[in-house]
Length: 152
Image (cartoon, rainbow, N blue to C red; front, side, top):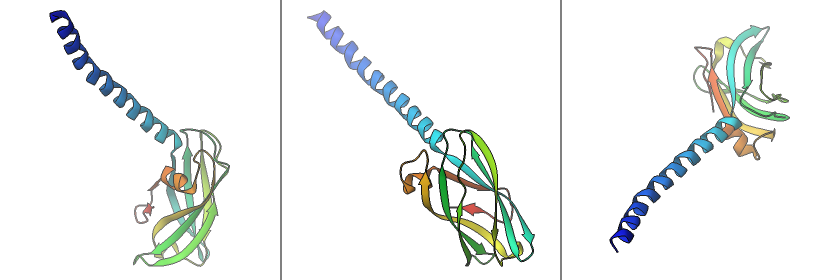
């Protein structure tokens, strides 16, 4: 009887430890899966080209598979935070484990009046994520332009 009680106590101690280990490994796998889905888009540079503001986007897809299509809905906000221009742009295809630079012009907008670029939505997506919502969640935005944040 005493031996059975000791076995039960050992099991009661061991089970929570095993469950804890399984949960923590599951969380780590989930984080790795999320990281593998992510794509980082950086507003790398802006410059005036005639009457347009040319934007350079660095697309970092070093974490995983290819994106055949990734069409973004962007807004250019002026320095007062007011929507100035809207643009739909296709940044795909983005090859697997590749970093690219994509250039796009906001027409009739001076970069001096560009206060922020907003990733408003994903219009189309064909790649690692299954839905537009998953694609939007997989995009990490950042900016190297000190005066122009890139947000979603």
